[in-house]
Every structure is written in structure tokens, then in C-alpha cells.
Image 1 (spheres, rainbow, N blue to C red):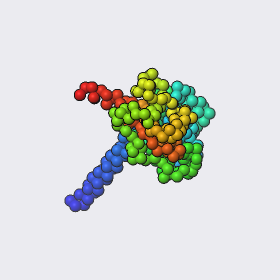
Image 2: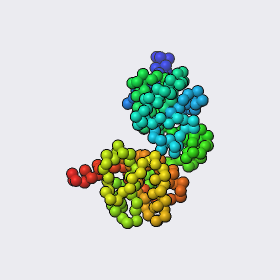
Image 3: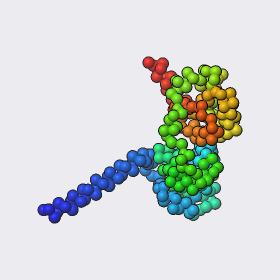
Image 4: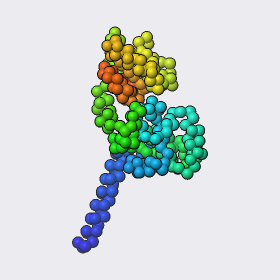
Length: 272
């Protein structure tokens, strides 16, 4: 009996460990289960194959210019020509694997990018879903930050550092009316839908318009004013921290959750 029990216990142990391992992977990459048909490539595998594949950054041009994988191309998923550009890339490189990536493990863009290609019969394309931050931390020599490579991983901005610059939407609204403040809306034209959150107060500049944004940073610095910045969902502004911090300016803050959180807070306020 004991001879039979030992193999049985071993099998049970293997099953438990395997299930636990799968659970950990699922927890670490929560979006994978939403896109089960999308093939993916792991961090170290991509690094080993980096000279054999074509790496495509599907984030915005601004995010790409801020921090990217060295040698990656930029074809934003939001671009109207995304499929046409990928098709041309495939035609020019018929046998090469295409690897797309975005910000990190909870970012859906890499999965959506692959799925969109599959829907248009573009094959041999996979998602690198660990994202740019994990890559930059582990492979700084193969990363580019603000045009410089290799990078210093210590210069990567953590989530905790980002949180110190976030302000509750209603607190942001309260501060926006002060005389020592410059308010900047960096949403794109589609996200704005011609609606200003603070009419007569806020200024506008697209994230990709680095010269205009820099001009507002310089103005705030020169006039010793606070710079309050908001986007649509409170995520894209994180990438602004790199360029702003590089100027030495510290008196800037972001609306937590962006305009979507602001409207949600207003609805809650009126309902209550």
C-alpha cells in the first residue's frame, strides 16, 4: 500500500505545484486570459532572439521617443495606417517574426495589436507582454531613454514616484483656480471632443508637441508657478515626468485618473 501511496502523493504534489505556477503566471499577466488566442514571447526569449526578429512598439510616438527597446520600430496601434504599415513591414520581411510590445503586464495594446493583425490575416506576429519597463530594468544596454543608450535603470520612474505627483480630481479643480497655477490639457483631439474642463483657465498641447509642452514648463519655472497637467485616463502623463524631471523643475502635478476620473467624481458629487 505504501508503495502505491508514494507515487500518488508525488503526482498530487506535481499537480498542486503546476496549478500554483499557472496561478502565479495568470496573476502576473492578467490580460493573457482575456486574449487566449494571442501568442506571446517571454522577456528573456525576446532578448535572445532580438537580432532575429522585428520588434515593433505599438504605443504613441511620445511614449516611444521617451523610452523604448533599442532598434524597435514605432507603429502606433492608434494610427489609422496601423494595418497598412504592418502589411508593408510583412511584405518587406516575409519570413521574419514580428514582435509587438507596449507598456507592461496590464497593458492591452500588445494583445490588441496582434489580434488586429490576425483579423487581417497577417501571420507570424506575437506579443511581448512583459512590456518596456521590465525590459529596461533587465536590459539597460538594449534600451533607449530620451535618446540616450545605454540607460541607467536608476533613472526609471517608479509607480511610487508617479503617485507622489498625482492629485485627486476635485483637489486639482480647487487648485486650478489659483493665480499661481498654469493648467495644461494634454489630451488628444479625439479625447477632448472640444470640451474643456476649466474654460478660460486651461491651456492645450498635444503630448507629441514637445516644444509647446516645454514652453509651458519654462513659463511655470520662470514665473514660479505650479504646473497642473491632465490627460484622459491619468496614465499617459507618467511619460511626461521624464522630460520635466530632466529640466530640474519640480513644482508640477497630474490629475489622478485624468478627465474620466474628474467626470466620475462630479457625477458622484451630484448624485449624493
